[in-house]
Amino acid sequence: MRILLTGFEPFLTHAANPTALLAERLDGAEVAGARIHGVKLPVAFDRAADAFVEAFQAVRPDAVLLFGLAYSYDEVRLERLALNLDDAASPDSEGAVRRNRPIVADGPMGYWSSLPVDLILDRLNSAGLTAKPSRDAGGYVCNHLFFRVRHWLETQGLDIPAGFIHVPPTPDLLTPADRGRRTGWPLEGIEQAARLVVETVVDSARSA
Ligand code: PCA
Image 1 (spheres, protein in one colour):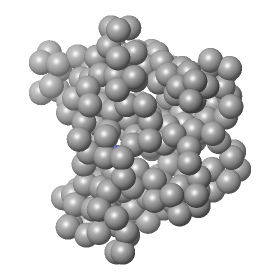
Image 2 (cartoon, rainbow, N blue to C red):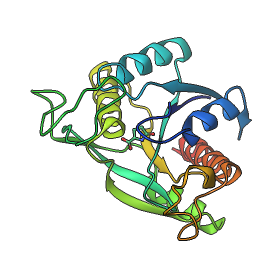
Image 3 (cartoon, protein in one colour):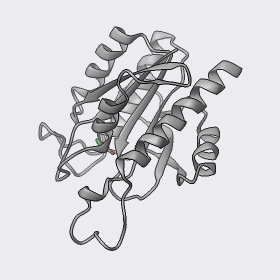
Image 4 (tube, protein in one colour):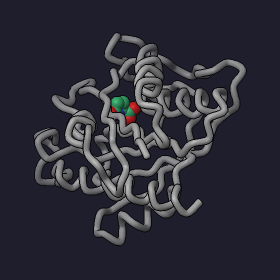
């Protein structure tokens, strides 16, 4: 089994993105008998999905795990829904701002994650890694990628597990105001969570 695991480059005021480091660290790793292909994507509405498709076609994976940073939370967040809506005040890395705009004009309103979200939540929380369900991935580039990927897989007739997971910041990324008030997660914890996500996806694909 091959797994495409994507992270994003640093964006806005964040000096680094733990998901880029995660994709680097896990690239080439074997987890639960699956080979991971780690790829970094640009934080750009117009480029992220094309970069994903290029990587997908090179790897031909059996499952897709999209990771992004959610700075405001000290927990892993399993996204349930990809919504057909760009709606964020912040510009992407190319200066594009998208407010209240459908991603695919004649597309469906949304797609469910096709990951075993609740199994993953149980697995992470049982291991002491706090994970929560999140209704959607926001209105910025992460949701945009998630929607475009789910839409692309549907239109290609590719029925494979694909979903989005937000991770907390590493401690070095916390602003001075946030230091002391919250902790962030060390990269090792984020990597451990990602490995457990892979294990759960592999187990559930094997038992399907
Ligand atoms: N997080 C952003 C985009 C890139 C990332 O890592 C988001 O949540 O949309």
